[in-house]
Length: 489
Image (cartoon, rainbow, N blue to C red; front, side, top):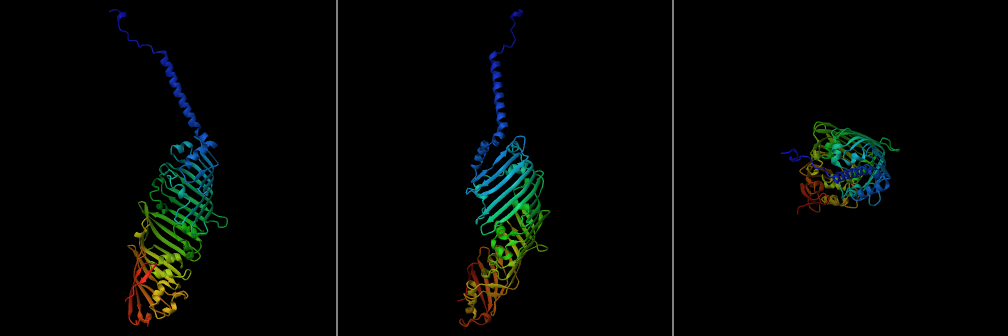
């Protein structure tokens, strides 16, 4: 075969138009990529303009039952974020959160990718003003009622780091039932966060012009990665000192009766809480002093899953509250005996001690405890259950409604709480110019009474009934608010 007859293996030439289309395709892809990169590069600049900021805030506010606004902000891929004039208002127009300026070294890109490396972050003149209603809800609750948490907890727990500094902050907490708010000014704080795996040491200080050193707090928080499974466990390594705090406002925000101010005083002149971890538990000491009462406690705090146990072993640990008789104190003591609900406010003092206690803060009804009760110079208002008891006495007609409060003497007594019942085996109440009332039995935490009244008829004999010798044992049923004597016959 000749050379010219051999089959050819040469590649056929590519048409010129193929190269043209390929160049056009690469050019188009490069243009689109360049346009995309340009848009992405300019995105923070556009979002920092008035129109861009308004667009972003509009999207955010669609998910809030309130309004988030700011005067201006600066976003950048390469520099930190700066926000000025931040405000959060309720639907009624009340400003609950304001901040003059917030600067952070975290970039716009860090925020988009969920990497919360804050670097040096400064919060200048933040102001939080909250009201708590009678149902226990504050102003922030309705704003975020129909949206997810405003904080990305998952990302924060795994990436947050930096140094947070708060300068010249202000906190105002008002509550239903309290005329005076809890108002802290000139708050400064420093919170360094090395990593989500490291413990967080913090320091907070507040001083108002009229009451310097109102609040100082210092402590260690567990690593962010363990949050928020058990928020109460955050109190296990904490030192808090405060003074000149209005007790009604503080009580309302803690979910307690503001009328405790009538027992302890309108202002807590001294408040100190110190807790230190020791193995799986922490030892906590609390002292609170007012003009007319005090609260002192040394307890153990033990985290259990997503809740906390408060323990008072028999030795070296205690809880003791002392103060004037008040409606708040009577509301507790009526479960020991319903006659306490008829005590005159401000008349006499009471001291309640706890020992051998175990309180699950997630399930208070499972609590067990024991202790003593000391009463001094109490007076009982006439009428009600007291009138029913006094009718057994020949002198009862002089003690019926309309008379002045009756002074009584109650010797020290022991009480115990278990199985949702308060028991007091020997509650003795001595009446002037009359006899002694002896009570025994239990009261359920739901208010049901299972008591007995024992008295000597020679002390309480009523000639009209012909009963004037021996003893009488009378069951008491009903509730702590409506006790009933089950008289024989």
